[in-house]
Amino acid sequence: MNHYFENLNGIIKEYFHVLSNEIPDFLYDYIDTPEMQRIGKIGCGCGTDYTKIFNNKFFYSNLDHSIGVALIVWNFTKDKKQTLAGLFHDISTPVFKHCIDFMNGDYEKQESTEELTTHIIKNSKEIMKLLKRDNIKVSEVDNYHIYPIADNDTPRLSADRLEYTFTGGLYSKEVWNVEQIRRIYSDIEVQINEENIPELGFKNKSIAEEFISSASQLWPLWISNKDKLLMQFYADTVKRMSEEKYLTKEDLYTLSEKEVINKIENCPDKKISNCFKLFENATNVYESDEPIPDKYCVSVKGKRRYIIPLVKTEENAYKRINEISDFAKGKIDNYLQIKTKKYAYLDFDFE
Image (cartoon, rainbow, N blue to C red; front, side, top):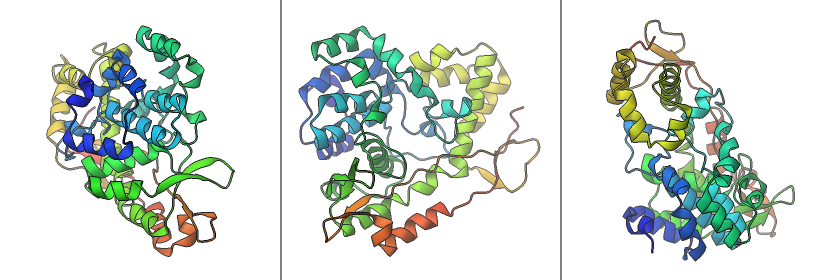
């Protein structure tokens, strides 16, 4: 077992064992590359680890998430290329993750940083050496969108969507424990969807309903005003730091989040550093239907993340859970009807 797994949080270690009862040997070498180790210093919570507005139970890194996705793909496919595509899918993630998508104006798809994936892989001596060893082309592992078990469009169930839903319910808001995840996960299999494409789905309606019951408690958090404001504040802070030459684009892809935060906290521009310290210590985000003057006030659309999984019926057909369960349909419909107030603000001015 390599250094990464030896130092793993006990909950994550137990959870990974649920996702796959074996960690394939080839994964260890790829995990140890500098490019993968870098994203171990970037949190999956898009900066929520560094403010009192949120109360994460533990730090869950982008490396953790990427390995989780790889293990799910391996569990269901036993395919090395698909598994590596899952492992690499966030290799180009910058500090604060999707906050940089916000900076790029990509609020709703949140994919603007993915374009660097191929570049990072091709420019890694270590990864290219391993791919050559394993007789794998870059084009076979640099785009996980081509593998529907790894990734597909919302609201279908994929390894990526399943992984961040499971762990969101462990570290950000406790909606299940590892044993509950084990029960839910053991009911999942590869099925064929309406478009004749492989997709992860449930064998039993009752387990799918249990999954929706818990997962639907997470979805509103991901479109909440406090979540959108936090991401926009990081985006605006990083943008201002960049404009004033205190931070480079390269820093976003080479430094750890803590190193970037240290740069912000010690920025010579006191407006930036003082406002960031107020943000770190803030405990509440305020909402309004109207813009609030002289405050950090934003109005931002967000990405609606949710899942409507397939379920195997008694007739051995595959149906969406909302077609066969009034309970699940109610949970999903209630979420889709949620509307947040137009504006969110913090009690200071960032102008």
